[in-house]
Length: 182
Length: 370
Ligand SMILES: [Zn+2]
Image 1 (cartoon, rainbow over the protein chains, first blue to last red):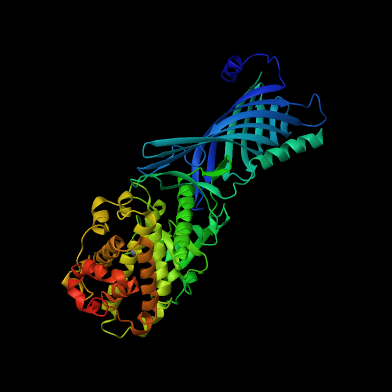
Image 2: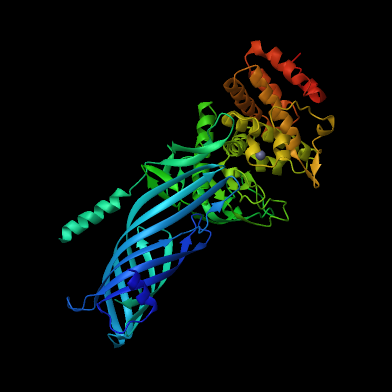
């Protein structure tokens, strides 16, 4: 894993598994406020392990497993002096779909991607009322989808994606993923 | 293979299902008046996501337009004119062990408010109050046009906004402790205003104001009735929250102390005329209101709390038979009726308890306190 992370930073000459890639994802999230008065920004960070399946399946198929974390809605908690509410999410997502190369070819090209799959979200809600603290950790499932554009340059993979989930979790997500073949 | 995937997905989707309206809210849970978290079942809620049910519906992203240039229709008839924009809310929450846990402060505030509205209505109904009223809209943290012109507070307040027959929960800015919408007493106070409007004013306040617009004394009568309305509202707030200092958790010490119901307060002769006292050029109904509230609370030393509450409701109903028509109100008009509605055996002690407080208008009590 550490080696793979380093690979993101240090281009290697010949990837051992050119159909597998590991990416670092940085997200900008917008959470619809519960009172409908606008959107709250939030940040996300994640790791994506992806596989291009064109060697095994007919068509430009791709599958990914992603682990990401975000503080949706209220990055640092909302508070009054007596009361504070914080929320933190950790998502494990499986995604499968297609990536269509529209420009160039396989290792030097770009195109569109569309992926969808189940997402397991661990949400931790924390409350503080005066000096009383409590936390709740729950698992929630959803179908999460993402669409975006990608570009490959030798062993590097870049993509920019927009994502949302069903049931609607009040979030719109935009992710930039920088990856490298393993 | 495909069907087993679908099965797993369906199980996942249902495993995170509904919460049967059991929600975690903030309430007074310690005998010393401290607030804490507690799980309650919102029995009147019909749509948890929208914080909507049989007693109230909470709206967000609201713009109120305080256009007072046109006549106002009673009982919410002009609501669409005053509420320029409003949207159904979508609460953010997770479900843990069957309990909905709000996952942002706004959702926690809205759920807690709904619980307090439900409690307030249930409490008044249990006393026999005529509250078969339709669900009340609650405008959460509205933007208010013309707020400055009309001296309407932009923050740190909650109100029964009579022109829209709805409640307004303003954002908490300067007030930094328990937000007002989470304070049981504050919500009950506002609900008591709605009850006063529909009982004492018979839901015809604006019609009465229009009919008596040319009466030089109408303003004084209205001010005295308004002050009494504030006092009755604080009394019910203290009754439901079992806390005569219910404002203390949400307002600065001086505001809370000026309304603390345990103080011995007397009706200043200068206030009897209905023009004084004033704050920033406007009549301040809370000063005389605090006298009314403290007097009613004092009666709880003599009769049970429920007995006094029922006497107040009966007095409001009796007032309703005359107030809107005559548009005359003097201090003591409600209190005298409250005393008259108490069991006869308790009336002498009750008269004694109020004599000093209402010395400035004691002649108005002659029919009950000879
Ligand atoms: Zn009030």
